[in-house]
Amino acid sequence: MHITVIGTGYVGLVAGAGLADFGMQVICVDKDGGKITGLREGRIPFYEPGLKELVERNVACGRLSFSTELAPAVEQSLAVFIGVGTPSDGQGGVDLSAVEAVALELADTIADYKVIVTKSTVPVGTNRWIKAIIDDRKRNPVEVDIVSNPEFLREGSAVEDFMRPNRVVLGSDSQKALAIVKDIYRPLYLIETPFVITGIETAEMIKYASNAFLATKISFINEVANLCEEVGADVHMVAKAMGLDKRIGPKFLHPGPGFGGSCFPKDTEAFVRLGREYNSPVRIVEAVMEVNESQKSRMVGKITGLLGGEVSGSKIAVLGLSFKPNTSDIRESPAITVVRELLARGAEVASYDPEAMEEFARLFGSDVVDYASNPYEAAEGAHAVAIVTEWNEFRNLDLARIKKGMAEPFALADLRNVYDPATVRALGFRYDSVGRP
Ligand SMILES: NC(=O)c1ccc[n+]([C@@H]2O[C@H](COP(=O)([O-])OP(=O)(O)OC[C@H]3O[C@@H](n4cnc5c(N)ncnc54)[C@H](O)[C@@H]3O)[C@@H](O)[C@H]2O)c1
Image (cartoon, rainbow, N blue to C red):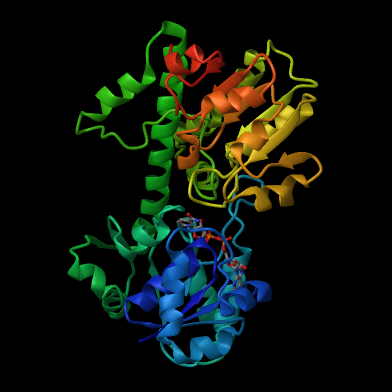
């Protein structure tokens, strides 16, 4: 079967390469000519473990190709997957302009039956809106069906998540379209992946409710951590014991500097907006967002607190810039808030991240923040080191070597609770972490 995937970002490129690996004939289309040229030359536009190999393998056997031209790709395809970005519009809503542009282009192009499969995260009602745009504007009198197929992959393990998802959600009114998409995902049936077949609005809702719930777990444990600090309890033991309760589960109960990334912040925001629009507010999620913002700022307080409340003129080494390990994505990363606030207070900031420094330099400029080639170089002359993202290589740092290069008071703000407080203090660090006595 021939498939077009529109958008070659984290979702589109992983889905395109993954579907090719399932045996489909896939053309990935993006309007960004630079990305497509790079992909044709074997360059992956972002860091995602295993993706390069997956793309190379499927390009080599002729199942995966890249183009900027939508029309010829769609002409050959029975199914068209939409994976374009749906960022925040900056006013609490979702910017659907890329989705709209795709719908209009499809209306111009489609000449025979197509199934449009929406992978982009879109507010409830958007899939019907996409179909209405195509039906109203289509040049040819052809039938089009729409399937909402929200994506749940996690950056950093996107390939594995796509190839072995916890579940596949398909929402549609059309049995014919559902049969085609089920056929595309047949390899997942074979590994007994649960399929949830439902209506369009329900499928759209599942994505937002899932992300809002995961974000809720994070904000919940962060507030518990903050309270633990006050009462002298250890949040790790609290989370561990909570997680052993099967009704709660251990995942997403790790305290830290607050959630970031390209999904949770904008998806919680959009969910809150949806609730308000329908006069059915999701007050828990409103609180989740509020807690998350204050958690990020609280982390700056920890760093300044270690330096006696004043950071002006101090050098601070920030380790980890991506919003989580194993990705180069810095969208809404807590490191952005931390660095921005430290700079505003007159600190000098050096940084190191295994994959995200190029992205970070694009945002902050390379003269405002220093970019080191390893953690030890970043810590050279620093009064404080802050671990903001828990890349594996920060878990076993030679702390004695780090300290040797640092200046007094040798502060370590471990915002991901990577180290044992007693061990670090015994080395002569002034140490703080999240939610531990
Ligand atoms: N990143 C994730 O972890 C993740 C997980 C689940 C769902 N999602 C959702 O998937 C969608 C895509 O996210 P992403 O992170 O892959 O985005 P992204 O920004 O990495 O990529 C989007 C791509 O779409 C392209 N594009 C935009 N308009 C286009 C057009 N008219 N024609 C062709 N290409 C166009 C862009 O050039 C870009 O390459 C979003 O709705 C997001 O919420 C993302």
